[in-house]
Amino acid sequence: MVKNKNTNTVFPLKYVLTRLKIYNNIIVYIKWRALYFAAKIPTKGYNPMTKTDRENKFQIKRAGKEHLDILIDFNMKLALETENRPLNLETLTKSMKAIFEDERKGVYLILFEGDEPLGQIAYVYEWSTWRNANYMWLTDLYIKPEHRKRGLFKVIYQYVMRLYEENPSVLGLRFYVDKTNTSVVPIYKKVGWKESNYDLWEIKKSGCI
Image (cartoon, rainbow, N blue to C red):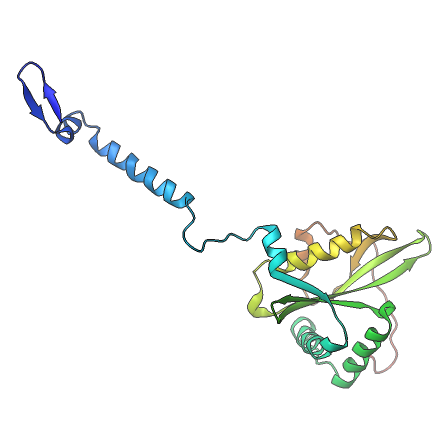
């Protein structure tokens, strides 16, 4: 309430502010501040995923014989999706078993959320005689379609980058991609990869896909 000293009349504060034409502005400001602070106060159960949270929520395991069925399933789906190429089950199974017996043929990493496998990536080393060091080739990147756009590539990629940076015998990372697979290149470009100055050429025996 506001009191007029001359007439001893008491006016409501709202009346005075309205007459001064600032009442509506004050109301708008109060509502804005209320929304501002409400947005800053976490609601019950609010849990933003930081980098550490993301790493703790997911697990990356080095694949072993117990993961054979998972890798076969992922690679079957990967080949169909990226190259429209059905793989021979018997050949793929033998290949995976050979990898488990000799890691020089490759190492698979599987991304888990709890007990559910969400994706994979593989790497293999190539020795460079000119540089007296290894290149680390990445291949067979796959994320289940229903789990894409969750930042899972970043989880896998950061893990691989740590392996690369902590190994002094590895001087670089490389990958090759089928020319029809246009979806994976932008992913790697986004994290700083550049096109190599090497082209890939090959000769294949008859019957080799």
